[in-house]
Image 1: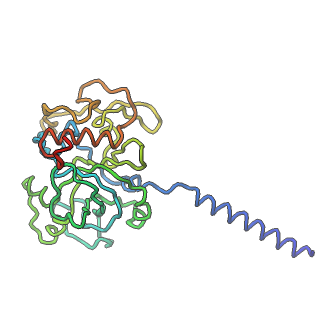
Image 2: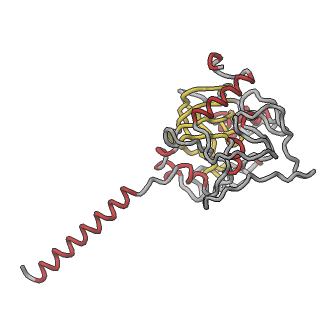
Image 3: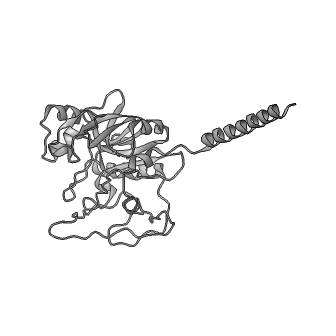
Length: 298
């Protein structure tokens, strides 16, 4: 065999090995989590001053200060994400012009999570609940494209979701939507209440609260928050004054047996409850409020 042919064969073998290694790395690399991508760069409100227990979110719960309970508690599976509505400024609900979703002029975009409703556990779903599905409004981060979110939709999982039809919610809060374009949109979507999406990303794993601040989720679900560097950190204590009043605590017990009211002793466990356990406690809270969809579950 000539030197040139040997050299050509060596290059071919090296190329094959490199190509195979790269392909294997791509196949073995974990798929980016849907919720990690959705949270990254998005403004997430933890509702810290609005309610002090997940029991306050359950349909039928009495008002806690400025907070009103959800319209419905559902168990559902995220199956898709679609374009929703886009605004020309980041104060979209304060009169900012609506623009095309893919417009370069869009400063804020709300996508729609398409959720297959497996069961309505409490309350009722409003307008926009059709064909066994509901669309939930979520902010799309500027750092993530809708296409990227769609690619990872298989990791979104099944969860318990506190929701309220957006048009009905705004009416309840005394801020009715009057613009025809925004009203049509608001009637077609539900909004997560109290950032209340509790998701099981894989069967049997502890529940996550993907739209909620980690410390706040731990406080509400009854476990000790552990930061990324594995050091346990206490939940923050709200600072209140006349300009920034805190919530008015209710007398109702927490929906979770181990949850801790503000100022109490932190629980020892660092593991969130399972989806099954959380569902049981939330349904029990709905039974106490008289809003459970299935009275036989009480």
